[in-house]
Length: 184
Image (tube, rainbow, N blue to C red; front, side):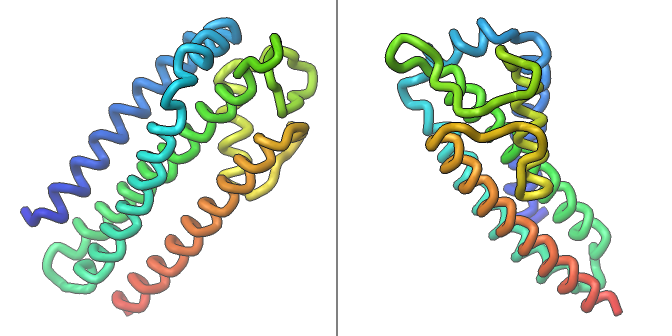
């Protein structure tokens, strides 16, 4: 097994562990727990976020390498499957990480109260699953649905997520065309 394959599989396993942890955490935390998490993690809040962005960029690089390897007849199916798995894992991790950021920005306290910045219809105290909804809709469609963005920080964060999503989809489209051209 090549070094690139081992690195990609390691990345996928790491992301799977993160997603399992996040799923458990998201389903067990209410708004008071999110606010406590936001206050506790205010120091270094961007570290995980920066690592996620770097990881996504690195996974793009690995995918470009594997798309070239996938053109070879030997192990073609395995490389295509690894590219698909790595793309899915990286995309999911990106959306979940943005959901964490939205939740923590929403509940971060300045001047004695939560910053907010998002308006969830019919919900004054959103939980992590509300932020997952917002993040996934934005990540899939590059727009918001029924949730209003009311704060500058959130608009900037949503713009960043939209740009990353656009780059991600452009890479997926280019790789799909590249792999399909190699098959036919």
